[in-house]
Image (cartoon, rainbow, N blue to C red; front, side):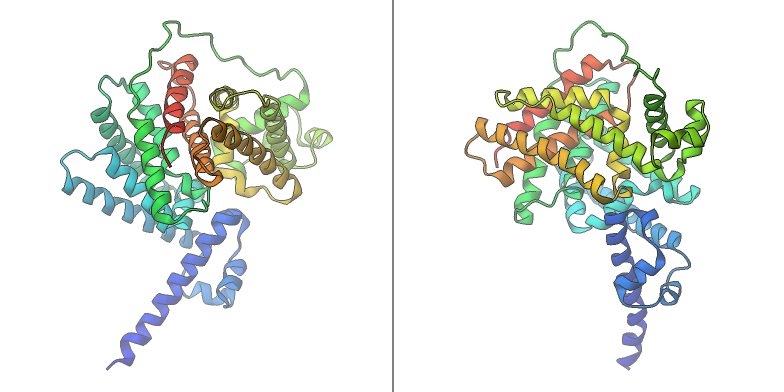
Amino acid sequence: MDSEPAADARPRRRAEEILSRAAGLFRQNGYHGVGVDDIARSVGVTGGAIYRHYRSKEQLLVAMIDRVVDRLAGLLETVRREDREPRLRQLAEVTVGLCLTDRDLMSAYQREMRSLPAAQRDRVRDQQRELATVWARALKAEVPGLAAPETRYRTAALIGLALTPLSHDAGLPEPEYRTMIVNLVLAAGQVPVPAYPRSRGRAPTEPDTSRRRDRILHEAIRLARAHGYPAVTVESIGAAAGIDGSTVYRHYRDKEDIFLTAYELAGRQLLSTLDDDASVHELVARYIDHTLRHGDLVAIWLTESNHFTGARSRDARALQAAYTERLVRALRDLRPELDNEHAEVIVRAVFLLVNGAVSLGPATRFSEQRMRALLQSMAAACLEVPA
């Protein structure tokens, strides 16, 4: 009697193990950087054994995303049952909790949507729109007078902040880390509407693409933002730049070289804004300005960075780490009661808040000046959150 359930449970356990190991590999190397044989080796089985549970790598990804979609739907339903209108704290707790307990699956949900079949992709987009609507309602309950464009950017900023655990393994106990991120969401979300400048400001300056090398960079970033890094080829970049693929190779070794060059240039430009006398508020303001200038590049890095490997990729990450370390020092100068771990959580959360909003792209009714004022006020609130 007891042997039958155990026999039935064994395939389920193996399917779960395959799903878990695959999610970890996708998070580390990206969906396109992982093969079925890689997954099989991590589980300790043959590639054929994987196919007994999942028909393809794509079906594995679909199963991961379905798992997250179902969990998010269940959590949203719980929030709705407990309160007629969901509160910002509840949404933050739900999102941060899911990031901490299902980090690999949530990373696949965040990063790999373009790799899904069309029907599944549409389902995820529908749910993301529903989630954004729920967050927007909670925000409007917290801050009177929010207009639609500002609500949209605040929502993206707060969701980006709540997803901090997906890209940062803090050296803190999980309950403390969870509480800290939730408090950061609340602090940023409850900021009153800033006193916006009356002028809408000048239109964003178009990048200088008169040099062929710069035009290649510009078109590569634009295409990757629109279609995803794996879908872009050297030939498509060349066509967009008005040259053939062979000409692209005179300037760059391959597709990865193009994107890593763009990140290196942007990273060095950001590091050039560092100085020992700048306060943390000044450094954050410079980061916001930099991110507004490089919004497409930031958006690609958020979802596509695991496609880049090797020494140059590590160097690009080292540039980010250097800027993070400088802001951590500046924050601790302002708030000596913070240790490095707590200060880094705040700094990284501020980065992701800014990145989340800017990655939406410009809106006709929300100028760059207003975006800058909004992000500076939200970031300033985060910098004051107690550990």
